[in-house]
Image (cartoon, rainbow, N blue to C red; front, side):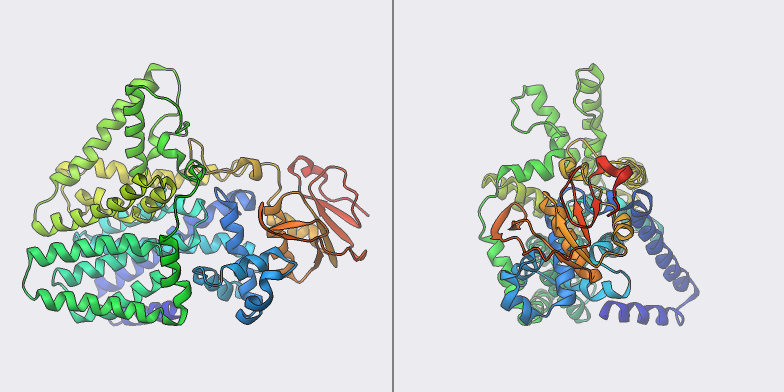
Length: 556
């Protein structure tokens, strides 16, 4: 509601602004609408077979569970009885009450006005979060590098629909996606104060932005704090005038951000401390979500010196958000030699152009501060925590992108070609998503991009078909061997008010967690949802196996 109020105030004030400012406000509105349309289009093209999840169904269905439960159950009820419920979605929601639940609470509050179920609201919600990154990036390139309106908007659109935003969405990281624009805005406000551009007027916006990050995705504060601290130190050294005053403004905002978190201290600041105390996660997590750094090849495989150089180039391409320019492995001389050399030349020119474009101390300080995020993934790699290192890179992706496109923002036309190519590649990846959505298997991309074909391919995930199939059912028995399918069915049935029973014993956390006994069969089910060809089940059979798509619903 606060964001809506600010937007309304901005539009009202626009009527009293100069003609050029009114045109700019209208342009921003149309840009946001256009980006939102592009982000939503894959749902319209590919349906829910594409949109329900991509690379991380576990997190996706946990968030949907949270949004469903928080919209229909009170905190007190979930805290008291959720962990022992017969429904796994309530157990999941109860376990996340003190684990940054804000992003799911937002959907729970918005969903009833627009969608029947949390599952049906999930992709539009992610598209909204992806669209909002546009404004954080635009705010940064305009205020830090002085980019013109058109150039700034082009860079921001490229990030919003390009690789980095898509990747975070496709690993179904709702909380992280919600803060990509906020971390950028936060660092920009720190820059404005540190450089002396703005004074005390920025304290409140900075405090609200910092508090928002802690509520939505506390882990982002590690990267945000590293870059912000480097900015403060850099500008205090370069511009010592009013040093104490500017540092005081930032310290005041940081303290206020922490005060904002007091009502939910356990799920914000304390949750961050618990996350930081975790040790390395299994290497398989890195393989599942970050294999694109190796062009989809096995990270364990023995390699030659030439192969090592190839992997290094591919890793840099991944860091730049253009892993897809590297060809899939093959024995052809073109793929083994020509393309890697061409990619290496492009990436070298891209990074080199950014360095060559530096023309003043302030820019050097900013780009050096932006590079400080790298200390965190380097430390995590040394700790053998590769998945967390990859996560740090995705959190820092706005700063990577802004730095690499600096030559365009600064209008350094002579050396801006590599950065322009980078922007074009990200825009192209955004457009290619529309093509990928038309594939019947619903898988976004190959070459190491996160995907779960073993779960995506055998099941009919089309929610639009589920609604039609469930029409007329008074009580549904769910008989499926897929825990992820069972979980999302729980939320859909509960959100639509259809009575349900789950006779099969399950585990509370998909393939792990506490045992959940099968519910007593009432004998009153008039419909059964199954995923096997010839089940013995009561009532009308709704088979969600894709192999039986032509005869998915049987008569009684």
